[in-house]
Image (cartoon, rainbow, N blue to C red; front, side):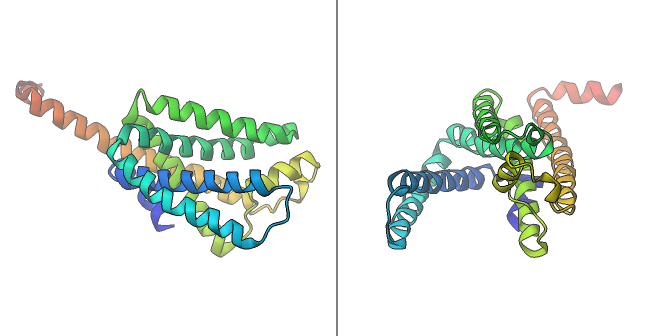
Length: 216
């Protein structure tokens, strides 16, 4: 929850810690995918999973630190996570009505790819949007851990495919609304600060502009 609030309101200022965490999380996720790909149809001890998780965590520390040195690449990964989160919420907003589970994965994959690609072109703006989205989601899910009544997006996709959406807890939609409220606040705060910094940088580079604006 604390990390979510920080990302929502000062995500661009914390871009290096954010991309480090994104690299760490991505590596662990990749390690888990490899585990399930290898052992999905096999009987294995839980110890095997912990080896993969521990190895992914150790590699994730290295990858996260490396991304701090390559901020633009790290920003693309961070934006990918933001796009993934946006895809989750888009599916929960209206795409679920199609009642096709495969659309869940297509939506997430497409949003992740588009966000990561866009970050390579306009980094600052995409980092602001991505951190606001990711932070809002972390805040909502963190609150749900204590308050309950939240439906996991994967579970919702399965419920949609089985026609069980009438059983979704009504309180879930309160979380859903809160998610967009926090995104709006985060975007407003971060873009206000960003634009103010750009104006100050422009004035520092061209001092005569400040004098002209004062006379106007």
